[in-house]
Amino acid sequence: MRRGACERVSVETPTLPRSNAPTDSMTLLAFETSCDESSTAVVQNGRIISNVVSSQVQLHAEYGGVVPELAAREHLRNLIPVAKTALHEAGITAEQIEAVAATQGPGLPGALMVGFKFAQSLAFNLRRPFVGVHHHEAHLYSPWTQGNPPAADFAEFEPNVSLIVSGGHTMLVSVPAELKHQLLGSTVDDAAGECFDKIGKMMGLPYPAGPEIDRLAEDGNPAAYAFPRPMIHEPHDDFSFSGLKTSVRYFLRDHPALLEDSQRVCNLSASVQAAIVEVLVAKTIRAAKRAGVHCVTASCGVTCNRALRRELAAACQREGLKLKLADKGLCTDNAGMIGLLAERKLLHQTGDTSLDADILPGWMLGTTDVTARA
Ligand code: KG4
Ligand code: ZN
Image (cartoon, rainbow, N blue to C red; front, side, top):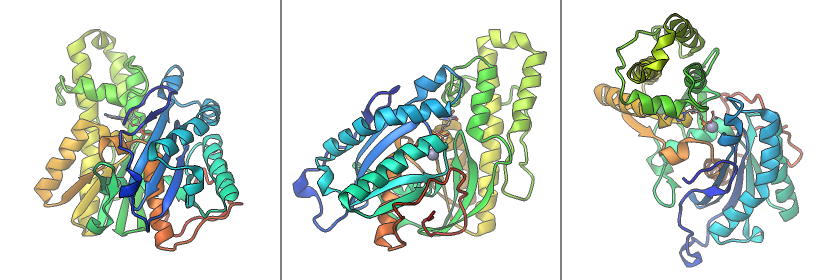
């Protein structure tokens, strides 16, 4: 996936020649604007034909985190150019769209509003069905999406426990069947990505610090400093990362010279990363074993972390569990995953969403597979 600051970038999927496109499939246009990525995708017959993402990460880096008002304004600026590019890359016109989808929640209200209302207006104008999608429900199927162009292999689906781990969320979800899910647990304070970002800020690293800590940790000793592994032994599936952040804050207060030594910065990065990864892996494996499933999946931004990918793979191998990790290009927010789920919902006739429906910024990943209606 090509990404850049506030510029049009897109997943490098080839445009399908029209002659290769299935004639009996649905062509769906999807929008994702829940946080700091403006994205539009064309999905057809379970395949992501184009997936254009305009990332705002450099815009927000200056402030050390996402500024909601700026995010909404940037979506307003980017969405039409991004949508035009997605249509162009897919080789279709707006009139060929047979359904429209958008992220309905959860997310930043102003940001969600831009994509959701734009998509509803388009569906109204084209007289096409509209589907509002739960952002995290869409993430549940990214690990099943592979290839070029990326396609969701629902035939391969099996019951699993899914780890969704980003800058805003850390949750474990039981997915017993396609389009069915139950939230097992989530963070009671900071998300794992937020913990990476906040600790990185204390270390003077640029936002978002997760990828930087990942990079520095490769040259560090994960056993150099012992940080707490919050809630690792608790029997429930909730997480807590704010205590770890505080522990690093006090550690840096007591060892201020450490940040001037590059090897010790690498050791600190590796030690922090090891604490976060160990908690994520231990709790995911325990939840999977308790649920009696044979498969673990993971997606969202922090799933790009190399140590997490390695440790999850090692733990799953030890426990005889199959592991499906989302491809790095589909870990972060993109409209392709929204479109794939929306198409699946329309094909399963779980219902479309009213054109009067409102955004649901606080929408919890519940126990239902029914598309939310306002
Ligand atoms: O899913 P995402 O793009 O956006 C949301 O938070 O919704 O995730 C971004 C988060 C940030 O906190 C970022 O620091 C973290 O994912 N992240 C990483 C890595 N790549 C992204 N954390 C650790 N290691 C990485 N390689
Ligand atoms: Zn996300």
